Length: 337
Image 1 (cartoon, rainbow, N blue to C red):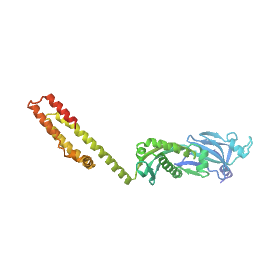
Image 2: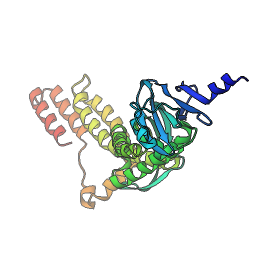
Image 3: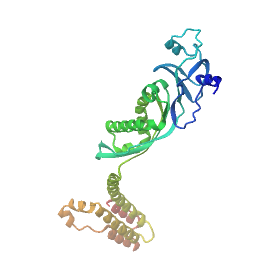
Image 4: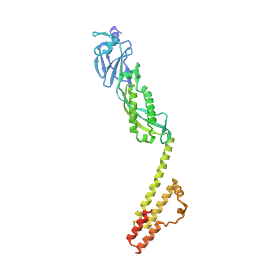
């Protein structure tokens, strides 16, 4: 190797980073045994920031652009090095590049269920997962708090710390909110927005900007979900009892108005009452209703409204009573059901 080649390897004329390694957040330009020429060119691309560090002390910061390195463009480094305005000798400094592109769709999730106190279910265990997106906002803070003097720092190396931060914030937020699980699950978008606001300051403390936070799922473990499903089923059964009683009452006047009149009422009402009794028995309705009826009332014979309507219909057919009288009596009987 000739003397000229040796001299070329000792001095740097161009400083830049091409982002060839995928997933890198920070990169230290190799400077060992090299010095930077006064007047060297610094290229910072649109998705980068550059930081000069002199013997552990942070100096000048550069956004995207092309720069000629002189005492004018390096005022902080000039001050640290005690250079005068005519300084034109090669100098040493560490140069760090930072990737400012958005780190998209980083995964987060609870590896184990979070045990919390729920106002409706008592102690429950929740699972949650989703994604988030962030970028480097302040290279000085990121250098001091995260990447340090390492030659490179990747997204994967930061994932573990950010995941712990997200899960801890999630647990604290749910515990302090006092909101029931069912309400949280029904309003996942608002819940995620509140979490993003809480996480934002913690991200900024690391020099990061949290661009997006998504909660994709909030659920109970399988065994607890089965209990919740049973509870929902019981509530639905109670509502079905009321619904069946309403539908039976509605079917009587409709059937009575059809051809065949009361005979149709009898068939429809009989089927409806059978269904109602079956459903009420399934949820304990029949037994509770019987228990609330006094013996005297239970023993009092009450004429079947269907039989009474059949008699009246027969009287109207024979001309004993008018159609208007039949309609009035029918309305009176139906109103008492």
